[in-house]
Length: 417
Image (cartoon, rainbow, N blue to C red; front, side):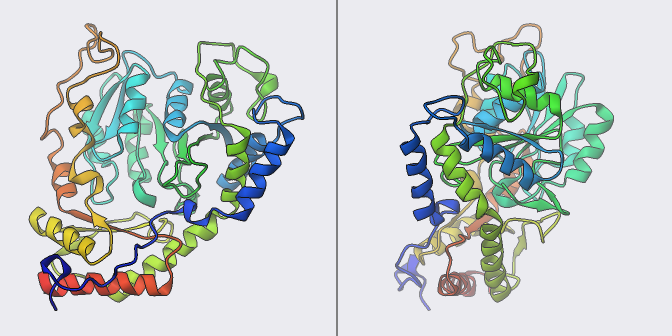
């Protein structure tokens, strides 16, 4: 059978659903938004009637993530990272270990805190390798940022065996994996702090939005203060209005009541959404079976991963690229994570450019920045170049799953068997 990329008929011509929480937006979100609009209370801290949506949303996020967890809602996933770093006291002279495979927001948050990003290799989980982290720890390492990509999991047990003896804080970037678990624990609750995202592509979406989670009361209070101008005003509640820390210079990263109302609806669907993606992924992968010349992405806990992507590593990059292109031609979106490139390949990161002409933190005379260059993390670069990801949506029907199976089988028969 001729592949579509070679002029044949594609398996599918109608677009597949690609969203997560966004695929489920509907009447309940509309009603929640109208409820807030009718109240006139759009700001989370005061209004014509007492606002309640963001505070309630924080309580519901905290309850979802387990006993003792506190939540602080903020304006984006990047804001959640920035707020967490501020709560941890990360600043100039510090280093933060970041995986070489992540979205650029992870790096931006570190740079905007005044700290230096130090890149470490990922392994077949597409998450930080504990051995690689051990190799880059220094006396200036203040935090390590494991990133749980695409509803997958970093091997946190191995990572904590490295960070805890070193006294280094762990901030879990859980932007892409809200609700997923690792051996029964929600991601974001295993380290010192977690940062969640509610951007359009995420499991729970409010268009933009984020949440900081932690079991540490003092960190939660500092986070609540930072996102509201540093705690200068008695507007804090939820995370601790009555016991705010001494004020400091902060930022305005607050979530609105409209977003909070939408988030509450979406949050109520989260576990069901994850189950839908897991079921669709299981249907597809069981039908496809093992493909010659490929190795599946590794999950430290296959039961707890969120099911939003099927990842596989090919024996060589050229085959991976052609396989992904052939799948796209068949009507099934596929590709390498981040175009097959590490995050430090982003020009602004590679060239260490900031909005400041002085270029801080890269130009600090006391703590000079290392030069960044391609080849810094060869294992990561190799894995990304050989990786193909196929997305899975909670909106997939059985027929959608079967189309994915047919497309993968067609391309595999032509290229791998």
